[in-house]
Image 1 (spheres, rainbow, N blue to C red):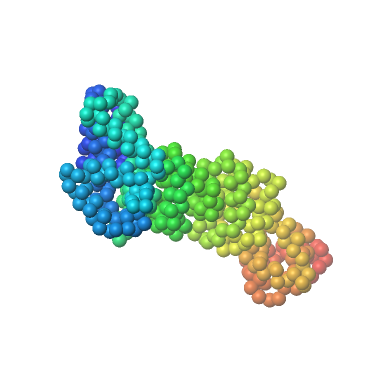
Image 2: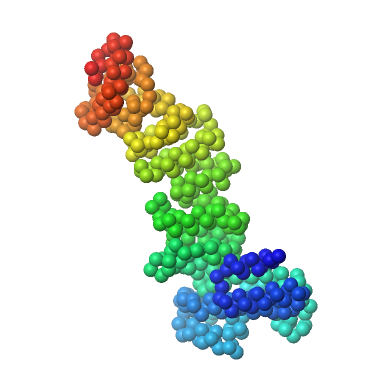
Length: 427
């Protein structure tokens, strides 16, 4: 049976030498050779940091103003007799006027790392008792914090690595990114997730036309097997509604994670969803979101009219009305869109002073006429509107709807006008 630390190692993209030390430590642990397990584990940790430093970009100038100092550091890291003490020195540096910690780790993490270094020294000289809890605690420290030991801070380095991974000039952007995701929990403190995801969203922005490999990365992040990563990411979305809107529109299936978040959902469907600009190829995304909201009773029936009126005012369906799927039209029928739209139109004045406002309906009104049977009140209102609106795109689009499908709309319209005893605009 594999240990948790053993599984963790397999998901990390570490240098082979560090992996060997950790594997040897696990062998020692399993045969109760805890002193050996502890020393090899710490050596693996040092080696992992050393290899990162050797391939890292130099620290920023505010951390190391003298470029020659970095050259000296690299020289020591390449020297067999000096590298381990140099790694320990870099970890222990306490920020001062003369020197900054190039890892930008917190004081608490720095103190804990120094504690484990001192524990290793005591272990080497047989000055301390080492048992399996000592080894497991060291492993927990490595799992939780190893990702923070990167030049210019864990977050900065992680974001740069993500950018590099998905940059087709540097790498194959479609290659496996699981090692990146596996390192997240060791990169950030609990209060840094918001900063990490904000920086990632700036480096790898998500939108409908993002490359598939970028979309796959963000979807994997939202569905992470690590509960802490997943929950912090979902919290990030809740606290950044602009990002929430984008993620949900690209991945409608993510709504299931917010089923219990009534406040978040209300903000979304009241304020953000109606403001989306949706083109034909993404109508399916809008359908999936809307269907989920209604099917899961997230919009109270008493608020259906307000919900659809927001859509009408923002004209969210303008670019879709000619090509909506049968399922989408059925959804609109089922959940009261057409009834709400009828009420909205009847509230619009049919007087001369309001004639220009009707041009806002040049897409939606033909869609309504084709999909709904008209009634006397509506026909009387529309007939008066047609007589006061100048010829143009509005009347042209209405005419097309009237004369489509063997003039079904025109015939119905005229029949009702005859019943009302009024002259039909389209005789």
